[in-house]
Image 1 (cartoon, rainbow, N blue to C red):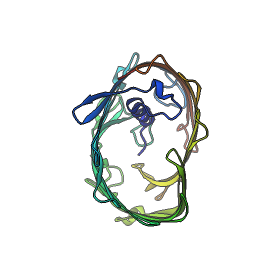
Image 2: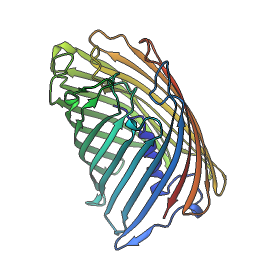
Image 3: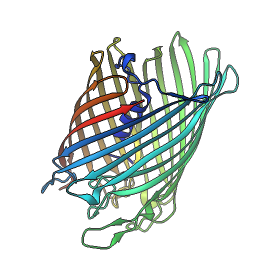
Length: 404
């Protein structure tokens, strides 16, 4: 499940932390000391224009949107262990389509426990209130407003390093609770068939065969348990997902990393009506500090996503992105991103396939370490073999950010 505005939450996180690599330290906030913590509050307000508010193929509608994103990050100053707490909000106010106003937020509490010199434990709990834009793959076509849901999650990871060998293990649990959607023309679409519990476990073994370079094997298992039967199919979508990856990771510096893993992934459903979905899996990340002024980031992934499409069991999803940030001047940062995703709706009777392309350009001007202004343009296009499911959108936004 992918949320259209998830990238904006990530941007807000960077604003709170003040940690964009291409940004001069002279323009990063100092934060405030509160006891044993350093606190970084922030507030971003912006104005956006979109020429396709509902991501429609035809009969598009434009809209102007005001956006408010408050945030706060608190990081401990303990000598050994670390505690990190954060809150990120994202409220939208539409001038034309007020039914599409949203109030999203995510709150997290986590940190690092240095159990021994060799063993680190990383616990985290979180709560997220989120929304899916009308036009999203899993939102009812007759929805009169965005789909909203809550996610409660907790996880713990452990990392043990002994010489050249690193062992990692993790376990997590999350519960997603979806609200009913009002429909155009009256009535509601129940979404309790999307409510689900998910249990995730993982294990990884890495060996440093040369300085700063590891080879690794990683396995994951997830159990997905839906509360109710699918309203259209009349069957529950409970399933188990397995994946295995073999890869290599190179980390020459703290800010430069290249990791690529490839393997196999499969989802088996408890009910034979959904069959099974499988294929090769890929997961790669790139964080490259090209120079003191320029950073390059990238990601490629092939995974299985859950869907409630009546004709499908799951989505086999390819996604890839590449971004560049460049410090033109000490207080001027330019950036650009391109992204591509391909979704195959597998299982049952579906032969649907979607391709999505995105490109964006942005500029941020830092007035001082506490205030900045920014501008961004984004183009998105989806091409689908399902009639009427494609769209294109142009979006322009201007922001003002205060950070302390």
